[in-house]
Amino acid sequence: MSTDPHSPTPAGPEPGIAAAAAQAEPAAAAPPPLPGPEPTPTVGASDASYSHPPGSAAPSGDGGAGVADRPEVLAGAAFAGGLAAAMILKRLGR
Image 1 (cartoon, rainbow, N blue to C red):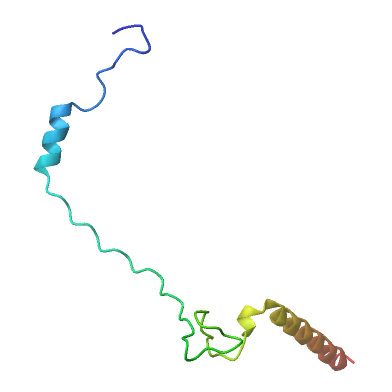
Image 2 (image 1 turned 45 degrees about the horizontal axis):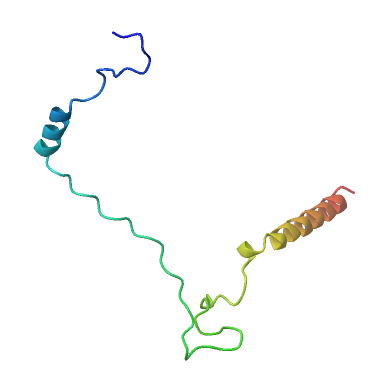
């Protein structure tokens, strides 16, 4: 063993053994690719309007933004419900 820190070491595979092992094992079949996300439907030329030009994302048909898309509506409803419950409990406590 040499005291030179840059001298080659015997660590690592031998070139002849690694090549023989690669040829001996059959190639494993690659797994099928995972399905990706579905593309967003777009507005066609015949269905286009001023608010939905051709090629833009098609409207979902739910009539607008739902409550899940607007968390401020949920917060307001929770506040109003809590206020109503407090008023009812105050009346019952008398």
